[in-house]
Length: 340
Ligand code: GLY
View (cartoon, rainbow, N blue to C red):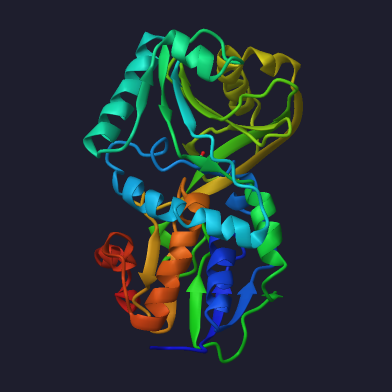
């Protein structure tokens, strides 16, 4: 079993920082390399820990991996001294077509044996009195949320941060999100997310993931009046900016669902690229190049999957263990010769 390794982690987003904290706790010599720490997708993220609400058809592995990672969050949040809200997620369908979307999601979760409670109009109202009349919804108990900025701030106090890699690192963990170095660059592409931050005197009680006339939207309350409203999703090559059209779509869908939005203060708009892989699952494990491990490509699930990723990277470095679903070598066919 390898111990006391000298490890550089490239990337101080929530994944890189959580990996670094785990490796430090296991007694390794760790430095994190990033000139703009916690400034990428983690800065935009709402912090939903929602393996069931975030699972889509074709991405069912996220449910299994997300549940395993969610189970690690209470201990991580406790260690870092950050709040973890465990009020569950409410799925809401505004009109009949939107409700079908909720029912499809509930059926998928049922097939996987995951608890989900379908709600009619009155059930949605009593679960969330701040919401407008919606066709129906479903309650996903046990889901949670954290403030990713608070998590990153706490992690940054625990790690050594550098502007450049160290000479003599035995292992490099690449956790640079949507911009991977060569030869892995092509494995991850950016999917733009625009997200707004509000302050309200009448916020929802728990995370709400809704569909309004086919438009997906979510509201994540922090419990102190702050509410995160997300998120657009669009492949984009240009630098990330909040567009008027993106903000309009989010505001108008959210306002239909949550009328108190009209009185909320619009505090911030942020745009960042989510790091998407061809199959929507992260790259965690051997990179194909000796001494380089990937922990990247977490797409919509970086916050949720951070503690599981940290555990997998630690286990891989110490015992060679691999989670097959996330093994980056599943893309060996599309990697250049040097990285197979
Ligand atoms: N996980 C939420 C999002 O990517 O917008």
